[in-house]
Image (cartoon, rainbow, N blue to C red; front, side, top):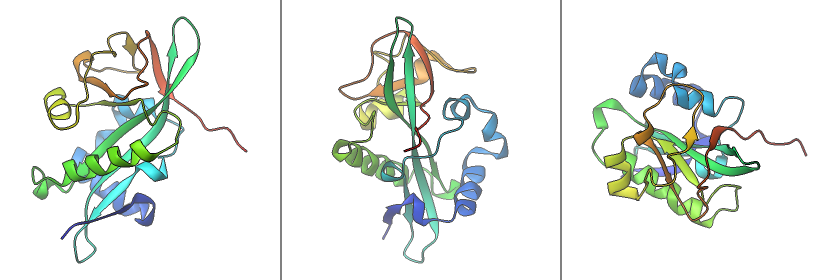
Length: 173
């Protein structure tokens, strides 16, 4: 049996080790890391999958980002990912379970951008299982190399303006 828990309950070193195994130690050079630079994961939308013995099987993280529209203004969004699964267990449904749990949590959330989710990922997978599309992302720009068709979004408040996606830094209280 797999148990889903808040990611904050897992030692950060364990999460980093899993991310290295799933995506490689060079993962920090990817555009997704530039987008969320300087932010911290949103605790209520970040989860871990644990085996019965407590072993970490997978994680998903969500990040506060914003679209700075060319015509002015900024729209809050939530960047989903990375979704990481222990390499030997990939394609076994753990990633889908984590994503579904995060999507359900986003529906109940009041986090800014909870209704405007975005990610960079495989359009066939994220469209088929979760409904993400590139329908409104054609005018978006990212801070680094990416394939436009892999820039996907989901939600009732996904902005439909041209602009640059970047970190949404939280203000100190």
